[in-house]
Image (cartoon, rainbow over all chains, first blue to last red):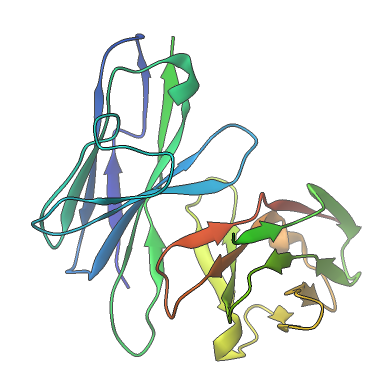
Length: 115
Length: 110
């Protein structure tokens, strides 16, 4: 199994600022993803973090607002840029490894509150 | 478009009672369906996936393509089953681009 460390676990930020969330996996994984869970809603995929290339964003999410990096197979960052109160959510990193029992693992999440 | 619907936000049962958490999906192709669980103060984790046909912690789920459902069942609920349960769908093999339902909170009372 893979263990995903995500930090910060929570933060309170001012409108207009940016926050970078880090995701570290303890083993090499094939794919890494970033999800958002707004209050009272389900998890929504933001993007797939591609190693060494630009992330693949889902409809409704853009690179300027959510720049993502993945410099190697075990680390990724998500930045929430120019934040507004509507960005208050839980942000989750997830990863999957290949193998006979391929599984999707989740980080513990980052609780973001924007004032 | 892919969609997963979990009609119940909260399901409250007594210990030993049967449990059924409902999940319906919409997708024109052949989806893969999953159930994820989040216990209090723990991270989200995979409970089971339909292609493995496993029974995990006494839970089972059968994919019914005719009714486009993937309901989660357990014959006798335990207090430790209390958690948030999410149904999820993948349009491709594996875990790429999971679409999640809104979740059902299961509360098992003694």
